[in-house]
Length: 125
Image (cartoon, rainbow, N blue to C red; front, side, top):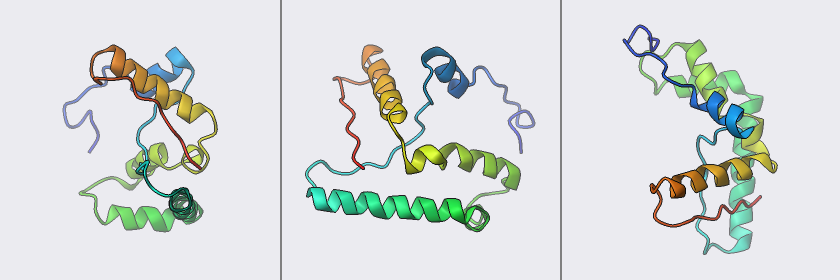
């Protein structure tokens, strides 16, 4: 079912607005690790997540078919588009642009009073 069929309409495409306004991708999610983990453990967690994501990207159809088992009446083409927003080249290697985008989003949340104190983004690889 599409948004239009469900009676919804698009007010603003936040991803496009964020890109047009700040020339950054809109961060949609993150994998979080505890700061008190041993650096070796953090590195191992990152390696395992990266390998899992790379496997899913290399076996996209199989991964999507697996995920669709848990979706309710989701059109496969819509699911493909949705998954592509969350699992893409930025997921494997975020470079410098994703940390910058995440920091911008957190700063905006603080400035709007939605986050009680300023948060400094830390990325590990």
